[in-house]
Length: 377
Length: 91
Image (cartoon, each protein chain N blue to C red):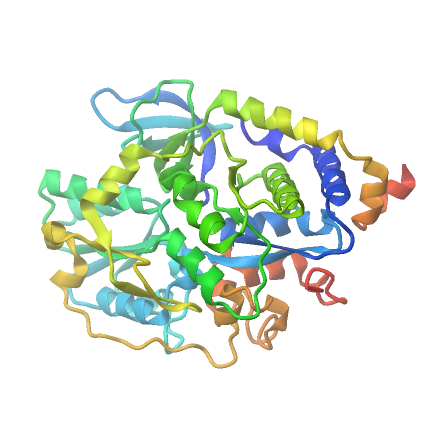
């Protein structure tokens, strides 16, 4: 078993599609939100939306850390990158995201700032070791999946005495975003949620209990492969039909109830919950992100390089905020496919390959230009 | 962003957190710092240069078996037609 091909089997997909179609009652609508941008991408890449019955639609959630980062934080990262003597290291996903005045890290790099793409926090540490005269700042973004690698790098930097390494922390938390979507978003009806795969390998299935208990919404943690998503969708349809609200785990091969204890304890050692943090599309959410603990302040870029506060500004006409709340689909945006394309993105959902707009552009822009079946609800 | 890829551990460096994983013919060095224990031959989920978690072969078998059971409960031909595909008509 390689854990890939087995979960992409065509015949099994046809059988699961049949099972979903026969389980779904024809006289009701099913609105299923996939929280994670990776799921959005997989749904379009493998054509899963076309395998669903016409009364089952996917609503795209805010689980793309590149998409939800407000322009203010991007502008601050650009300012950090432009500081004399600073080398800003970032995951490649962030390079092309426009800030408040449409300037990106890539543009700042072209203007001479020392901004480098890294694959791993280990690469950023290697730069700090090799160039002790530079201040190396790691632009840390991501949900709980990507946070433990940042914590490992911080522990290593301290153990090695790497005084020229710091972290600009923008790590965000999944459960508060789910809570915001379920409690505050007008005009979005969600019958069930496909829970994230790899966030859940870290935090486990336990933190999702409130979705079923407080919001009476079923949630099924789903793997990333197409058959995983189809099986999880079938599990949701069965819960919805039975009037049951429970947290189920389809991705058992990698997700346990408690998650990865070692990763969680590393995170807890280095980070604590911020009082509030701004999310693109969702506004300021309480207790929704992490900051570096005071006893790690020597590694905190926000302490070492006091950053001027910046207000977030949205691109005029860009519907990313409503798309991230699940209120609109990419084709509802006037800029989609005209002014805003992957080559020249205006909004974050088009920049990130996991953004809903990029997924529509790559796999669904012609289909959804016709009477939009998937948006019928 | 949260993409993670299953890969098999083929070598573990002594006295460090580093391991080599194989993904088809591609070899890559990853950190095992987030795992309690790992051995050569284990499959792990690789994310930004770190092994996030081990993949349980037993649980994967259970999932595949459940999928197969769920799939036999429906008549594929009607379902494909309902789902909008043409394959059901051709069959």
